[in-house]
Length: 273
Image 1 (tube, one colour):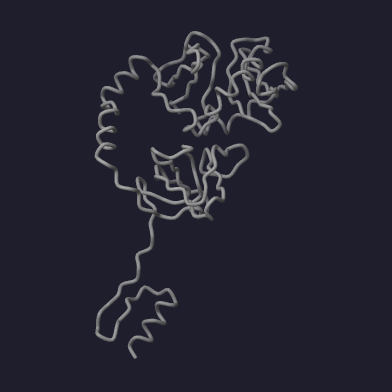
Image 2 (image 1 turned 90 degrees about the horizontal axis):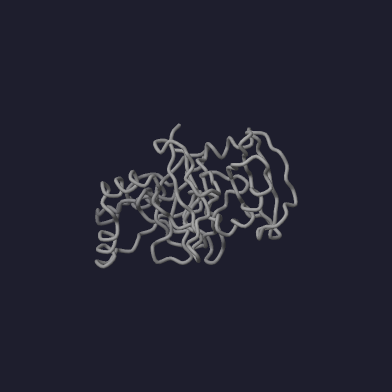
């Protein structure tokens, strides 16, 4: 008879161990927890799609990739937003396609990551520069370590694809040098390029992704870009020389054409408050 009350408590979800007739105890299963550095699976029907976002929130134009139900991911960071916990996740090294970004916690479930093989551990140890050496190299060049574009979570993930559009939008401006604040792909083969010129004016250029004559070129107010400053989105400049900004407050990255290695410009991120 001792079994019935225990079963009733278990059905009600109360934290009580189950007592068997022989006196043995079975503790309730521990709740799964998602931890930074651990693994998760996309908790959706196999093959179905889940948006991966550039930040821990749902807002227009911040979908950077698409995960599929069952994908195994590594957790890199967490963030609380309202009633939800968001997780910054990344695909495993051998995954294809690779992506990194934020997924809401109710769309994930804890999972065990595969054990790394000895060759993988040795490769990581050999290929990764020592922290001091990496810091010295960055300080010497003033340039940031390069992350593959398809692994990025900001607008620069599409910079090579949209470069023809960026170049032609910048060319139209009459007050160079021009700073590109954001470039995004739109439907029907279009792109939108947001820019600031030397006179402090800001422009919204809509153009074909392959470049050409802009279909729209409108002035914008500066308040439009507060969100991008908060999100630490990069700036881009089409010029040969690196922008003359304080390296203590900016990190720089040279952008080149992967097929010709021709210089295209500079991406730079503000690092000071």
